[in-house]
Amino acid sequence: MKLRTMVWREIFERKNQLGTSFLAILLGISVIVSIKNITHYSEKAVARELDALGANILILPKSASLQDYYSADLQQEVFPEEYVERLTNSDLQGLDNLSPKLSMPFTIDGKQFTLTGILPKNEFQAKLAWQSAGIFARPEGCGTVVAIPGQDAEPAKETLSRKRVIETIGEAEMLVGADMAVSLRISEGDSVSVGGASFAVTAVLPQTGTVDDSRAFAHLHTVQRLAGKDSVLNAIEVVGCCNAISDGLVQKINKLLPEARVVTISQIVDTQIKTNRMMSRLSMLFLVIIVLVGGASIANYMYANVFERRREIGTLMALGAGSAVVLRLFLLKALLLGCVGGLAGFIIGTVTAVILGPRIAGVPVFPMPILLVWAFGISVAILLIASYFPARRAARLDPVSALQEV
Amino acid sequence: MLRMHSVTKSYNHRGKRVLALDDVTMDIPAGDFVSIVGPSGSGKSTFLLMLGGMLSPAEGKVVVDGQSVYDLSSDKRAALRKKKIGFVFQTFNLIPYLTALENVQIPFLLAGVDGDEQRTNAASLLERLGLGDRLDHKPSELSVGQQQRVALARMLANDPAIVLADEPTGNLDPDTGRAILAFFEEIHREGRTVVMVTHDHTAAARAKRVLRLLDGKIVNGGE
Picture (cartoon, rainbow over the protein chains, first blue to last red):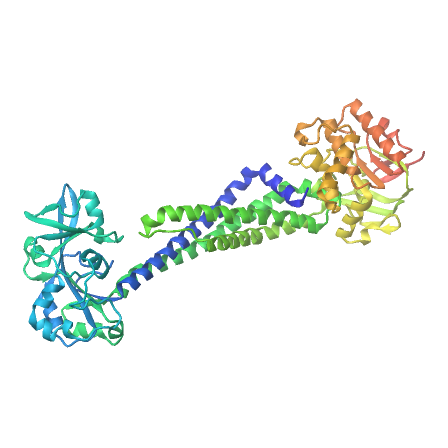
């Protein structure tokens, strides 16, 4: 028999008394692991999003709010389409792909979707003024996503989902988001009717994990007509050159379009970054609560445990156990409970994160082994610190008063 | 050899000073079998715990094999008990969540004996006490007499030269009590010093000597 055998037996003998205190630690560790896990993958998703989008710029009406990059254009506010012309005719350096957009809601089979009008690149090119003086006449190659006219274009759906621009789209053609296609059982070649206009589905877009999956894309001018609006837009997406942005491209566009609001993607994902930061702070708050509440609860339990076991402690002392053995008996209990709490907290927290992560943060979450070390560390530290003074009291017990024989 | 020299111990009980031992001086030679008798509150248990290094006197010295026990630190006194002294309690004081075998293993564990040897030795002691078929029973699954026998096996585990028993038959039926007393005679014959506190004069008579404690003083003693 080893000392830890005695510890395990005692834990199982009096498990009910331990339950509440241990649960406080267990739940606390689970919540922290869960938050940290979700936050980590959310941050990674933001980083990936930023990476994939490069240094995009979004031009919105002045009164538009900023919440999510992908849904920034789904607002009522509009500005004139003429802004596109102003941009293309300007001498601004570092502007690559432009994508003017106007969105409108529509319903099919009782389900709500968004129809987004986009202006294909071939129409930019068709305008000679733009060709000669506009963005496509300028040298390219600043490292951002660029499709130079004349080069082989990627298939329309990949271009739209990745670069958010498209080479060509007919006035009666439609590209359908992945979720919408599944929901309405639409496939390429089908026909869809929106607001009395009939569209031929030319492509079903790949899954992006964004609101784009519930959108349909059609020609800008068709959507303007369906929405009953003249040449207006909700947004212009611009792939700006990174260097140009750092050289003040945003300010230059602002100067050119003083009535519009010009923001970079990083400003928009800032909301997500702030959410992640809030989650991090929340996990710190939980940590403090666990240290205080869980620690106090464990300390209270340990003091009660020492009191309840004083006869046992006295007996061990009568049998020759020194104070070090008694101290070890209680600290070993704390260590074992800490390890179990850490492991169980990691498992519960990870399972919770993997299940709830995609729903809460909209990102896939995977187990992070490093959090096991973290959970162990926190759990063991809390248990050991909270148990030290009760254990010391046990070790210093007067064996006679412990035995209550006198 | 156990010696008490001018030992005094008092307690405060509800503001009143209660004298448990009053200037007690006595010797118990090695290999002796002594019964301590006296009415409740006469200081019998105090006497026994003090001999076992569990309760320090207010005045005087307690000497075990030439070593003044209370000049040692509490950890060294624990080490002395582990090496030389075996306690038997009236209420047995078995660890309730451990089996009979594991209870007897405790002194081996404290002495640093490895697991296999612990089990073999503990099983052999329990078999000596007639509990070979109760090794895996917890105290709650044993009769009172069986529990006392487990406690005796545990007491013998460190092969003590000195056995201190506090009312060892106090909770037992007469037959079991007699069997336990026979066991004390047996371990005395092995050469151990046995000091037994009891209020039962029949039990006390089984010892070589009977000391009577009254109001903290030894009032008579003899063969």
